[in-house]
Length: 375
Image (cartoon, rainbow, N blue to C red; front, top):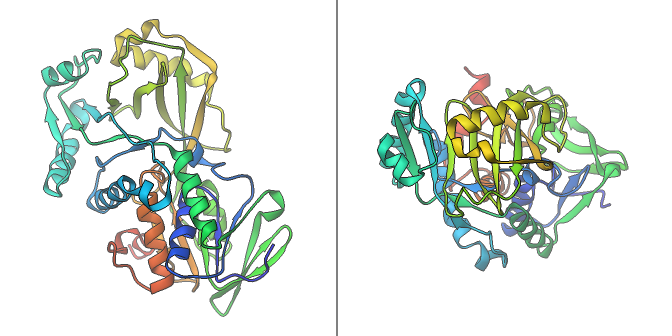
């Protein structure tokens, strides 16, 4: 392992790899990515795999617009097909969430995102299997679709390596500390020794809180688990069905191969287990049958499913960029399960912060950790 680097990126999930690629693309010569397990070991490899423009506030909508455009040209840029399949995204909204959902929908329309507001009859026409008895409106994004996280991660990995980025995986490369001198990062400690550097990117997903604590920084992040289950083949749900979300219940479904993928839950995460909580499955089945009654005949395979950690901030925006307490420490965390859909934007913003000292792609102010500290 090299012992000196201009930038050390902690974490080889999709945001870490994107940051490394974009830094190298900007001309930084010595970039090291350190991963204690394997590429995509965290939530990047356990997502619902959607590319979505239907986000809940202006900063994230702009992240999505930028990332969507970049994904559409990713094959020419990196030589990988991102696997985009336009299926649409439908959020069905009960009375409790209707005002805030309509407000967000109108904001997206004002920002140029194609967003349709549907009544119950329109919802039934679009997705006949959905029970709308307790639904007031639906918000539909026809441009949203599925993508392939593994292909995208591999594209960023290989793109970064072509620029000379070094990627080390395994327990011996786990970062266990950050060295600081006079409020400036001077190195990172790993299980196999110290790497001298003046720039560190905290792209470590669920571990971001601990890593930030090494420099005396408290990140306002809550790690929450979403369980994802997959049924056996179920042709009653057609292949062209959109992803359907129940906004209030933190529940969604879409096709996954011949079966149906169902995600639900926001439970506190005490570990990073890859398997879903099958004790929670009866609750998922009960609500799934309420929202989509035809799922009563679906069979769930206990071998199919996974769980992912959603690192959530109070305002649901990620934490990106430099910090006030220590020079040379940069965050790219708190993505809330949306790191994949925003990977092009996240990596670009981190690269601009470090290489240029400021961002031009998008105003980074809404993403700085100081927004919480200065409240």
